[in-house]
Length: 459
Image (cartoon, rainbow, N blue to C red):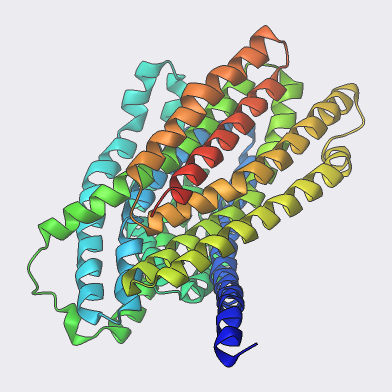
């Protein structure tokens, strides 16, 4: 064989080897970025669980029910706003890749414009919730007793939107460890603040369940203050406060961000709807659903980390116009997410019975709850198996600033297909809460199919 023929034969092999090296490199970058994002989600969940447990243990079920309305409404509004702010991320990641300090500063100013606009719309919505929610049939006494907590959470939205903006830009700059350190410091402070403000210590009066909301507000303000100091220390001349407002840039970011916010609320809302529906089915179904939902929150942290990492890395490749890196990121993201889905599925299926028997007692109701919970946990595992690649695909599409059509996909998959199917199986086939979770599984599967189809069809 001549030298020329050897070079021709070696070419495709060298190209294939280069592709695999690039995929391995990008896979490592995705894991390094996704891990702290996942830990941040788990710590935030820990703060929410701490509030719930402390209110329940110190003041009982009635108090927990009173603050639950405000907490759930806050969560829905916050996810909508946080998703909208997430529209900054693909633009910011591209600016970081280009080392464009001026564009980064411009995008941060746009982010603060969004924080202001979202706060003006969101804070009154939560603040006046006790007044308008009663028109939807909620118990007036319950709303009135939780009004103080609800209003404290409305004020919490203001600093939390600023905190979310910093989390977004730090993640887009592939530096979420900074935010993780701040979040870890706030977890014990939140628990201590709950204790002091709910029960009162020394000259500080006891605020009861309202203290949990006040503690969350103070922790959010402290987090934002720390992040502002860190940002000011690192700020450059390009971040001049006298720069003109970029309304065209704001519109571009909103076109990407609003569909992300709606998508997040779509997913959060379907789980909230299942929770409310399960509450009408009896104690056994409610108990089994509660355990499964707690486990869903834990495993979701992993998929959320991979999703955001995939978005940032894809946006970075787009900013550099690096098609080879884009292909490697796509392949690595789908491989990692599929592997993670398989691991979660096996862990949940294998651990379903031990976990359920540990969580419930040996009474007749507990035994019945174990039987239902085992099936739900297996369904949750299957949901991760089919859902992880879909969430990664959505992240990759967001990195390409493609968010409107994927939003429609998720609305159709969960609310047009999944929800009616779940209700049909629950009521007409007498499957109870298991039928509702089959509907969730169908919604996740359809989302994955549609998202992957759109992603792989891109040029």
